[in-house]
Length: 178
Image 1 (cartoon, helix red, strand yellow):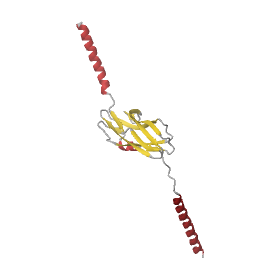
Image 2 (tube, rainbow, N blue to C red; image 1 turned 120 degrees about the vertical axis):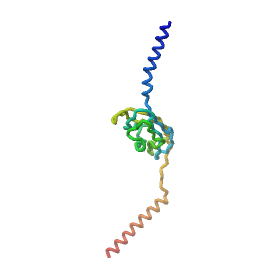
Image 3 (cartoon, one colour; image 1 turned 90 degrees about the vertical axis):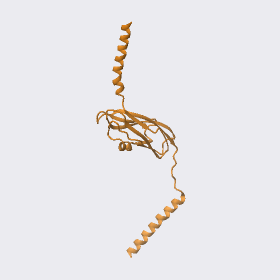
Image 4 (spheres, rainbow, N blue to C red; image 1 turned 180 degrees about the vertical axis):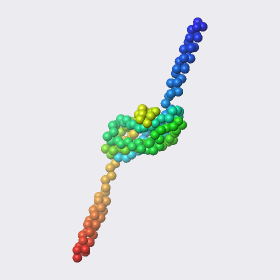
């Protein structure tokens, strides 16, 4: 029985030794994102978040990706703010702090409703890697937009101004012709 305990202890020690490097290799990149925004159709909204490398090694950040439940036809994503805040290589210990990450522009024709999506940071060990480094989900609540319709008095004022400009130009031509 003593040999059985010794064998069990040896196997447990071997398991710990084999699993320890795997735990040390856990990806140290942390992505946070404000989870929900409400926006009117025809408007835009900015999502904020933070990105940090809490361990080693450093990683290249080469691209970002979006997935979206409603499809992309009524939505445009602009991640330029993310690339302005996060360098193309994040050293160990890097943290962006809370910064603007991306803008979502919602077409005026977008149907009101709740849409879910995810924002992924792509990169890896080389400048050409495109592995998913971190992903966060977000929700976008679209409310019906309002279209601006000019009042009749505004159109009347515009027409009077244009008519006056045309008459002034005709008068100036007659004076120059004489």
